[in-house]
Image (cartoon, rainbow, N blue to C red; front, side, top):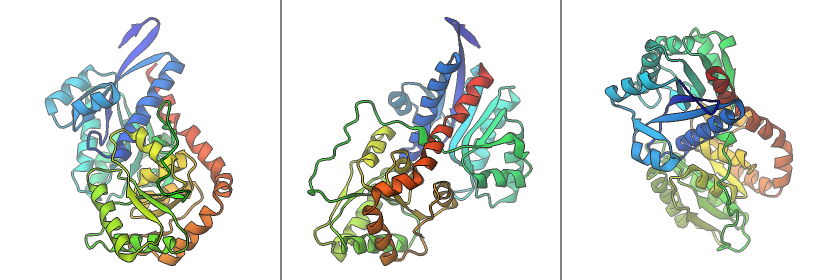
Length: 376
């Protein structure tokens, strides 16, 4: 640990799903780095973050901080020995829906830090689903040995409680991205290539192997276009996959026919704040990606969620909302009616949900505040 100009310097490792071209996870990292800097300034701590990344050179270029390979045991050992603490999060790191190897990796990194006597901090993680019972033990162990534990929803806290983590040790906070600001000097205008049509942000991902969920989404969007002229702006949050998925739906819309409405694909961006800017230019968001919905809430853009995972429902619940449908069921006319009504009452939506959004934005800073206090 060092001290410069009466400011304490703390070298912290940040572990998460970083360097994979996923805009949502990159937004989490950007939000954590911003919050640490702000809270460090407030509490007299200079944080020196070291990010564990799949693409260290890209991460360093994007965020201006040190980054090292996430899968190199020798590098992990060296960096953890040099650090003052390790932050794990945010995002859905502790789940086995995408495979069994995810949880052993992230708990393994935490365990190594704890074995070397370094304080560990869980930063607004989404925990679960965990379908393999043998994975409960490593999660319980690293959580109980962590200096600070925060999760992004009550359901994650309840799951940790069921597997043996003391509830009083767990703080429920929003996803870090609720605190992400727009880039400095952001231009909120968007070229009016489609006259004054309302802009509907669309964020979809490939989920069902048979593509039936995308077929239903296309039918729902076409139903809205049959009621009024709109500008569908597809936003690829994970490249290149989401761009491919978006093109599939756009081709389907062309085949169905959307009258005078327009469908276009936004240019992918590595910078999460640029994607936040894209969302801020929309009048409404129809989102399947969690962070598309969080971006929309962050910018007070009225939103409609399509659920493919409990984390979507959990976030919507915090705003007093429910999903319009799921990847298994989506009624086109019900979606169109709801979206049409929402477009006619955008300010009313902001009034009804503004207080909840403001609360989430404030609470998103809590983990950084706690970590700065514990390391100062």
